[in-house]
Image 1 (cartoon, rainbow, N blue to C red):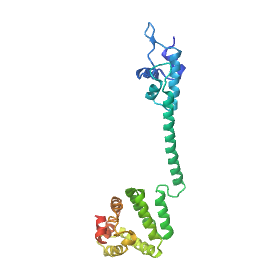
Image 2 (image 1 turned 60 degrees about the vertical axis):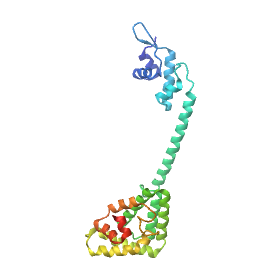
Image 3 (image 1 turned 135 degrees about the vertical axis):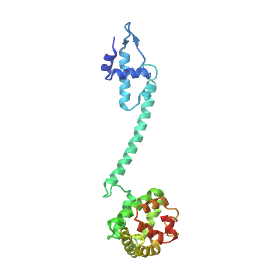
Image 4 (image 1 turned 180 degrees about the horizontal axis):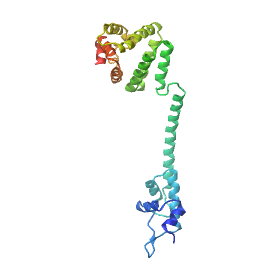
Length: 256
């Protein structure tokens, strides 16, 4: 006679696990002695050991039950279950490998949070305009990240190409950089200050250079990132938003 406690010790498990195995049909109920105690044998112990090995490999109890079948001697589906488990682990390994490669790329850069494409654009910006201030650089980063998320990879590639085309023109970089410095300064003035209208007039002129495309307006330029642009505007000061509204109908549509 083998008691449930002795069986648990032999199989390296617990009496609670054995009772659960009975409940889910993983281990058939053994015969009982006259006193009502379960009477296990070596066959039960061997089955429990098989169950333990399969669980340790990663199969769930329902999967083990299906693999071993109802016959306590031997299941016929163990190979299929293990092949399926191996295929699942291979997929997990591929996913983990891709994530580790992505992490390696991030860890190799100074900026650990932006995508590689945004980081490359910001690096191109600081190369083309080394005098770019931290506030402007932060806004550029925010806007680029929002546009990338809103438009998707393919659409953002087109935005990035136009962005680089502007950076390749030193005169345009100087004009935009000078305007950006004045725009950043609007954060500290009232929305009704006359300087807001002056900066807005410059923005109206620079529009095609800031957002090169059919209209020069980010909300109308093929639909690129309207939601992202609205989120970006929400982070601006009242004077900066007013500046964009005064720049013209296209810009006002973006700012509304």
